[in-house]
Every structure is written in C-alpha cells, then in structure tokens.
Length: 402
Image 1 (cartoon, rainbow, N blue to C red):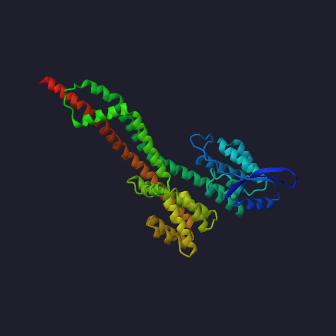
Image 2 (image 1 turned 135 degrees about the vertical axis):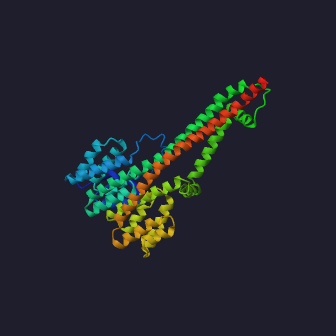
Image 3 (image 1 turned 45 degrees about the vertical axis):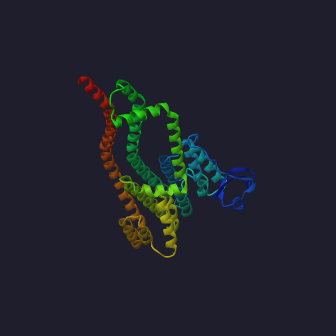
C-alpha cells in the first residue's frame, strides 16, 4: 500500500487535508471521491531514510501503545465518540511522536477516512496486527473489545521482550567490560611492567607475545582502528544482505543456551498474536499471514506463510505446522485439539502462557549460571595477563638472588 497526502474540498466547501492509503494514485482518487471529497492536490509520500542516531523522533514503545489502547477502550466504553476520544488522548499522551500521529488520525477521520486507514497511515508506529484488530473491531462493531485485547497483547509482549533482553544483556555487558579492561591493561599497564624487566632477563613466549601486542596497539593504533572499522563494516554489510540475514536467522535458533530461549519467546509471541487475531474475528488464513511476521523470526514467518497456502488447499493448521519441524509436538498437538474442539484461541493462549513461563524460568536459570561463568572467564583473562607479566619479574629476582 502507498500513502498519499491529499488536499480536498468537502461538500461544505471547506478544505480538508490528510493522508490515505491506496495501491495507486487512481485508486486514491476514487476513494476520496467515494468519501464525497473533491481532489485539489494529491501527492505520494515517499519514505525518507533517516539514521536512527540522527532522528529526533522519540520511539513509540509497547508500553505507550498498551496504555493508549486501554485508555481509548475505556473512553469508548464511556460513550465518548471516536474522534473526541482520540483528540482528548492526543492532548494527554507524553510521547510526542504518538501525539503527532493521533492528531493526524483525528484530522483524517474527521475528513471521512476509515479509522483503520487512518491508523494505517502510520506503519512505523502501529503494526499490521494493530491495524488488523482496529479494522476488525470497526467492521464488527466491537472496537472497545478489540482495543482491550490489543492492550493485553502489547503488555505481555513487552514483558516477554524485557525478559529475553535481560537474559542477553548481562553476558553482553560482562563481555564489553572484559574487553575494555583487557585493552586498558595492554595500553597502560603492560608498558610499566616492561620497564621493570632488565633486557638480559629471559622472558617466556607468552610474555613476549603480550609485550609485542601492547607495542603494536600503542604504535600502530591507526592500523588496529582501521582494521576494526573494516571488519565491523563488513560484518554489518553481510548481516544486512539477504544471505547473511538468512544465515543469522537459522544460526540464532541453534546457539547453545540462547537458541532454545529465543525459540520459546518466538513461539510465545506467535501464539499470543494468532490467538488475539482469531479472538478478534479475523479469518484463519489472514490471521496466520499477520501473525507470522510479528513473531520476530523469518523462519517462523515463512513457515506460517506456507502453512496459510496449504490451509487454503484444505489442510489443517496443526498438520502444516507439524510438517515444518520447527514447532514442538506439544504446540502442534494443542493446536490440533483446538481445531477439533473449536477452542483454538483459548488453547493458543495456553501455549503462549506456557512458553512465557518457560522464558521467565529459563531467564532466571540462565542468569544464575552466567554470573559465575562470566567471573571465571574474566579471572582467566585478567589473571592470565598478570601471570605473563609477573613471570619475567620472578625470573629476574631469582637470577639476582643466585
């Protein structure tokens, strides 16, 4: 879908501005005419690539969206019209990016645009899942219920992401700390020790290696810096390529310790999203196509996309997912029971709850195991360097003593 910015005249002769989604400019014109608007100006919005480092827009978090959805639902339940509720929320939300988006949505809806189309004009803020649920709630007259479900989904997804992030952040922080300490010792500490050792003293091979590495970093720092920049750039470029991305997607699910944790979180997110969509009344095939990309894994997304095509041919969800070999048997068996009993959304919620608890338990276990392992690795790294520095000093003292 392409986003167009329009300027039109309504039936009262007032100028109306806003955005609209369409496959082409002709389709956009037809939509605007169908809304009773006369087109004055219509331009395609071409996405501008901005560096996230330079961008001044504050990111809209899952917590922001969860709070907004709950407040929006509460206001609709109190009988407040949609545009009035959105306008009120736009005045009180703290996130400026979300505030600007809500102000634009209010203008678009007042101009005659559907609520789902108005939300769809901001794909960087509202996901396909969010827009699908808004569309279903708007069409089925159950927008309040859809928003409550969205709020619960976003809150649980936030908790799940934080648990996975906390499990990965600790070893990453320890690794960065160890590398910084290692290079600081090479640059500042090693030259001091080297000055204490007489030239005639025999130095072990490991000590000569440490001295040589220190001297190389200090005297040829520009080469080391250039090499690190070149390697980092090559790794980033390869990771962004299709081949590199595909390799990483397969590799990250097989990483010892972390792979199973990532897989559990992906299955939990997929199951929760699919349950939310089905509970909202979205057809199975459309729900699968929307839930796959939100799982956070291209492997799951591609598997689910293939499953959606096979379901259209008459196969069951459970059988198609089982053939992929990615989903554990407990997942496919519960999905099969849900399909047979007509309680698929309920059982998908159960699957999500089970794996969310598994992620929480695995995270706590992982953290308790990583802490001593990390300390041991740091001790080996720093202790090994200190031993290599002290060995020639001990040798020199021994030679003087004799």
